[in-house]
Length: 541
Figure 1 (spheres, rainbow, N blue to C red):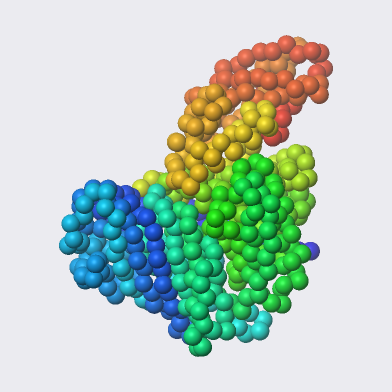
Figure 2 (cartoon, one colour):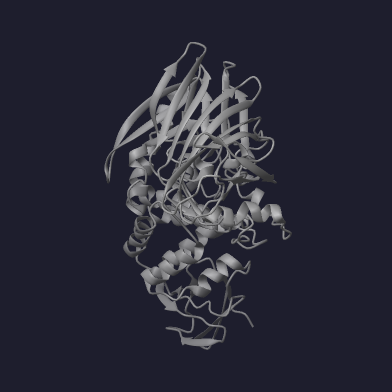
């Protein structure tokens, strides 16, 4: 019997939402005046890691474009990390700290359209995660050979937990990141993008990595270990894609076998979503001392080289054992989370709903539509409906963990309503093409889908994203007639539903009032297509 760790889903940390918010929350989650006037262009990070002290000393040179001529700039860095100095053009700047927000007084005139830089020196002991990746922070472990095995995962806690940044998702560094990491010479440091320089000074070694595409702040990470490296190339839609793998030496054989799923993942996802979004930066899979996360172009992996989720099937159908959950799910985030990023974390369902659904599409592509359907229906049992999928805006508040299974169930229901997999696939590819490397809101995406499909879906999105009510289709059969209606729905929830009547597909559009339809036979057998996330109640009185 496999361990039951997989029953503790990644959505647990999101299940409870606080309704009380403070100035601290607003500073973290809103576009303050001191954030709005400048556009983040590039980070140049230079970090030295002291493993014995679990501390880092670093410098971040931040390049930005002036949008309005203002003089106070908002940066973020959380305790216990601290800023040692901030300079612009060699001049030391004065700043005021409020919670994790630093308000920097710029003395140089900020002319609209100009490109400027500030240099921030920082140090400290970053938060250590007790339950990575959900409890954000650094992980300081050792491998079986007692070598340091270190990584960080900061989706929930944010990039400002360890380096000074513009820690809000709406604005990403348009020109990417250059990231130099200095570690003991016996170790290798792996970060996002491509390795552009490696220098060994004897006692220490520095690795400089570069990302040339926009990148979300929480996706910037470092991994430090006694790694071995192997690679291959994938012939993708945009040409040759470099695939690099960094694993612990004693896991090399297992990795070479398990990571054969990476080209399979790319084949499926490029089919459904379009080209991998970061050909310029390559794709990496990096072993870490925790389960894994979607760090852009540097997906982290700790799933024990087993299929499923730590060897178990989240859907309890057997279909989840046909793929390695971390390889497939976290790589799906390259499209949904990394290329397309939520403008506000309240809309994080865009990341997790579509990426959870990518698991269904992977099964569909390689094992058939029924395999994907069965997985989705089984996974749907994990929906708790204890709070809405949408979070609270402008206070860095995510929605319910239902964003994973319920978000996927909503997308699967939309697929049934569209009732044409080529049109559905075109929609997914168009979303990735038209919002390529952008931040977006749920409303933008909802309106886009309605425009592309010509479907009235306002009530559909409102029902599944903003309420905890599951639509109920009631049906009663009498004297050769079927009466039906929706209950437990918002007013404008009006989608078509596929019924199976005597093994034939029949489409109906229920409303809140009873409607009638004559059946082919008084003894006709009636059921609802189970791929719709709708409760079904038959023969009610």
